[in-house]
Length: 251
Image (cartoon, rainbow, N blue to C red; front, side, top):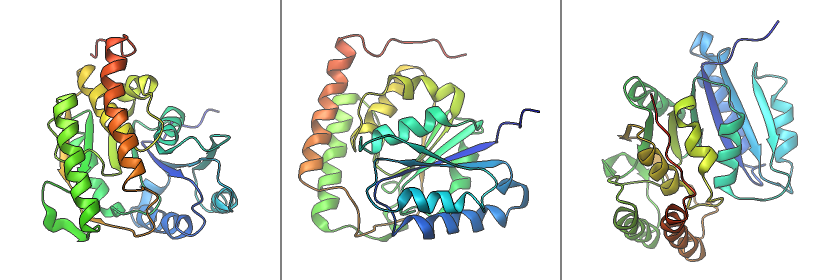
């Protein structure tokens, strides 16, 4: 007998996360368990991005406790964007959400995004709509770099969002699948491409204010990754010109 598809898929891209993954999985488990049936109707997908530490073993150990926890492998280190894409294409839930392995945005904020999906195809967490919800700020240089990058995003893609980089986004999975199938950016610059594709395919999207706290163990390098992300923005235009994002009709 075929098991029914879960209502929700939660994707966690993970690269060398042996320190942060255990408390994250525990927080997600406790959050879902306190909500009764949601633990049974939610799958959690840990995407291992070629980790060289005990990240896979930690996820496998948690599979004994979680009703629906899956571990998928990229084979080698490909980047956060590739990991999110892989997880989303593996997901089976009607709704799908990806979150950072450090849970910088707590799971309690999830309902805000899922509520938005009642009328929208995509809901993206935002730190910029209300900066009072930032519980632990980044260094000033990082915050400034983020603001400058957002300016480039708005200029080069026409996207209206104040924050494209918050790692907490939810989707009506089937409607958004085309975006992940066409996504080409594999590292930290994938978010603007994903939102550009959502707009290109006529998906509705809303920006939602969420609580967020900076984790000083972040893997984003403020200089080198910012440069890579800028070139990813240019590649969006190049890919569009080359016809790599063919439009589809959403019904």
